[in-house]
Image (cartoon, rainbow, N blue to C red; front, side):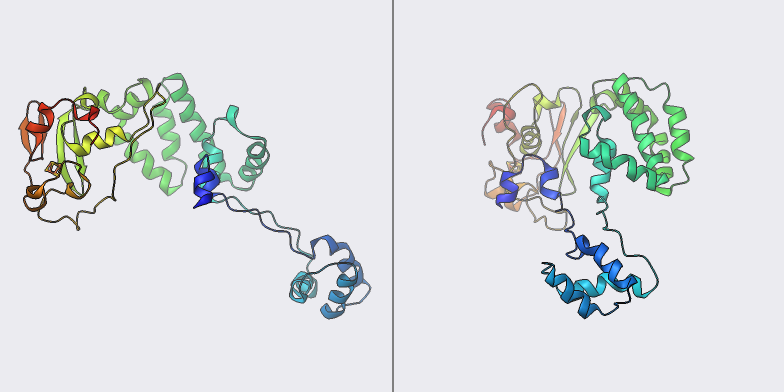
Amino acid sequence: MSKYARASTWQEVVRRPPRKRSTPDPYRGHLQQRWDEGQHSAKILHAELQAKGNLGHYQRVKMAVAPLRRGLPLDEPRERPPSPREAARWITTHPHRRTPHINDHLPRLLGHCPELRTAHDLVRRFAAMLDDRDATSLPEWLDDLANTGLIPLTGLARALREDRHAVTQGITTPYKAAAVTDRIAVMYAGTIVELAPSEGLHRTAQHPYTAGLLRSRPAAGTRARPVGLPGRPLSAFEAGPGCVFADRCAFAEERCRTDRPRLEPHGTHLVACHHTAELTAAGSLLERTP
Ligand code: SF4
């Protein structure tokens, strides 16, 4: 737990420790020399390394000289490859914000893997469109994405083409969902709990879950801390006969646990809650501390 409490970024939590050097690594020169001199007994070589201060196990020495027995050179000390998550972070980090570690490792990684270089170049070109808020080169970018020959990227190109209008809006405007859709449906445990006009939903949420979602997001330009919802998310298969949100709702009453609320109109919203009228009459749900 202390590891999670101390971490200031998610990368610190998921970072794996670097591979430890194998104990015979510093003695590779000696092993090679003795092997060339005809000493092929791992037991004797281990004893020699012990005399030189190596406290490693016999098995390590045996494994270290195994390539020599097969007529191969001694293994080079291996560098731990990055995890997929690490590689994705290196690729998506803006070049101006890359650390010396990324600047050192990323070019070598891309040099080893042409597919990753292709993905990297496409990511940077898309990022440039976002930086410039200019989608002029989107069609050409989608063509290149579709022609990579990499199945996941081809599928992504197909999906983005189907939603091209939304993608263009997302690139060229500072607004997101509200710019491309008139209404937003908020779902919990597979059930729509609120359906409302996109414009202004962040101020006029009427369902306790919608309000909880909005309170739990970081707000730009403020130091206010997001407030998480209590409890754990429910799957659609766990929902009982009552309101799907009852276990986590601060306003739940007995009826909420036995009687599933229907989606009903309240002003311009459709809301599935037994208490919408009382809750909204008392002021904006977003400003109320549950
Ligand atoms: S019906 Fe009850 S439990 Fe469900 S959201 Fe409304 S107040 Fe909360």
